[in-house]
Amino acid sequence: MENTVDATFSKDTGTGLVLVDFSADWCGPCHALHPLLLELEKEMKKVKFLELDVDSNPVIAQQFMVMSIPTLVLFQNGKQVSRLIGLRGKAELKSWIETYL
Image (cartoon, rainbow, N blue to C red; front, side, top):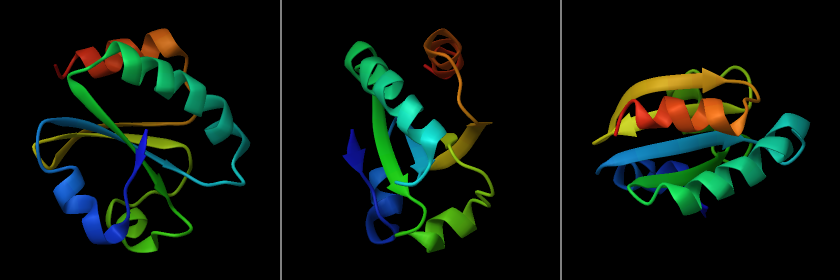
């Protein structure tokens, strides 16, 4: 899973279906979610998976009003189409993403 930062966020999320994992190094649920997202990334080739560290990239975190982490945001061609907050299971995540494919 690639990292995105404030400076490249618009470009990174501008085309296709992109899932952004807003997280932080100190977040336990974020660490639990990460392996599930890596598995989904391997299975769902039509989706781009990105991770954004909210501590290092506060501009984008504030722009998208991320108040709790992990927060997962789906973008379709640069526009936010959905979000989930908190740790979720792999099956629920896959079903949620597939809604937008």
